Amino acid sequence: DTNETPSSLRIEMPVAKSERGVMKRSISVEVLRDCALNTVHEVPQTGIDLKGKVDKWKRNSRTGFITKVTNRQELLCAILPCLRWMRAYDIKSNLMKDIIAGLTVGVMVIPQSMSYAKLAGLPVQYGLYSAFMPVFAYAIWGSSRQLAVGPVALVSLLVSTSLTAIVDPVNENGSIDETKQMHYNRLAIETALLVGVVYLAMGLLRLGFVTVFMSHAVISGFTTGAAVIIAMSQVKYFFGYEVERFKVLHTGIQNLFGNIEYFDWRTFLMGSICLAVLILMKLIGKHYENKWMRAIGPLVVTTLSILITWGFKIDIPIIESIPKGLPPVTVTDLKFHDFNDLITPVLVVTIVGFMESIAIAKQLASKHKYNIDASQELIGLGMSNFIGSIFGAYPITGSFSRSAVNNDSGAMSGISGICTASMVGLVLLVLTPVFEEMPLATLAAIVISGVLNLLDFDEAIYLWRVHKLDFFIWFISFLGTIFLGAEKGIGIAVIISLLSVIYESAYPHTAVLGKLPGTNVYRNIKQYPNAQRYNQLIIARIDAP
Image (cartoon, rainbow, N blue to C red; front, top):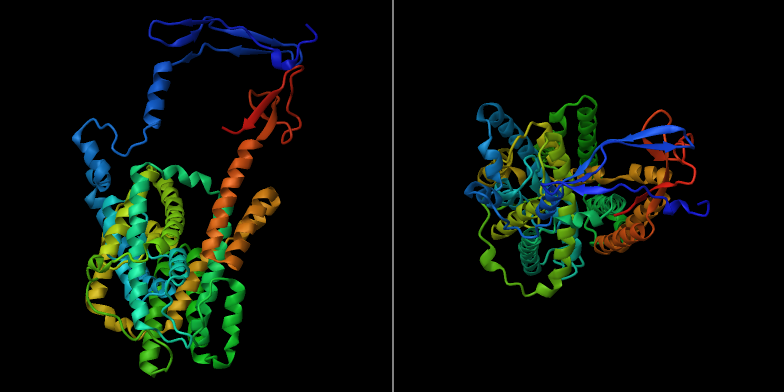
């Protein structure tokens, strides 16, 4: 019938049912002749195992954390994921690697954690507290064997911008109100506890799939904007005078240069030298593939700056005081009087922290050929934050830079994290007086050096070349973060992500396919103009669920 449309073309293939419930075609080989291409396609006998497909659907559709287990070992591994790698751990070949990796990350995290605590608006000891007990907890409940958790720049920025809206301990003249500072410290610990509870609830409800709704363009734009804000917030320590806290770029620039007459060239020189050394050591380590150069950079500038400040008695701002001893038990001091005000900060920190952690965890897992369960990762982060809040920690998550160093140093299991936390505990017990002479400009240099890796302008250039819509999404997320603040920026990022998912579902990319000459491969005819097409037949691929 010449009036029949291509969409009505069909091939009748009778189907028979076998004794075992497997659907099979009743013919073994069917020859299809195509008059347009004058080719013969042989369709081999195939079978559809219905029982196998149903069983797979049942396995993938489980929604509860406590699922059916066949023996006691599986139940124990579900409760304590560390048992999975402990059962197959080779002490002879892996223990020394883990110890070296853990100590290497420890050297890196000690100055970094103090710097990030300062960024979060907290006394520096809270950074060390956050790199202590939470790391032990993640080694037991975390699913990644190479991920290094602890204080990070993005979460520290979010804590600062969120909590200062509730109580700001810095007076107009730059001095610290001790009563407000104690209130602020308590709010940071309460935030960590609530973040841990939210992570645990999401993990138990198997909500790890939520990461698919955040596109890479949105996350890249947000982190780039946040990195700019973080770097600007640290410049005041280079200039040597106090600057009123800010959440957006233009306000920060105005505040920074409003008191430029108080510029101190000594702090600027100290900070600039430290930053230059950090960047130089990173470049050398990357060029010569030397993992140690990158790891020891923060320790080198910390040691040199302390020696210079102490030896030459330079009068520049320093840490001054760090309480000696292990973190105190703080859970009894939590009151939650500001619970309603903490809801938004908790949700923002939860989203950003999980996105940052799961991204690096999956990347490391693929390199070492094991699987990451996103819901189990939520439980690991939840236990880390929950237990950390009992011992004075503020919110933590996985660190990109320290995880990379941990992996490059040969980490094979959570034992590396245990070694890192043990080193931090030793510093808290013995070495805190040494770091009291550390200049604030050095802390700022470590923070700026760390966030330089978050700047992802190359991604924006790439998106402009290949996909204008994704570039527009990146640009809106970036501008929203630097001109409206981190909290509103992440809100815009989430909304844009959801809108992009809805748009792609409503208007999916559709490709007309053609057969590559001499093959059985079909490709988009726009990308392969020489692909052969059939008369009165269109083969289309719809890129949507």
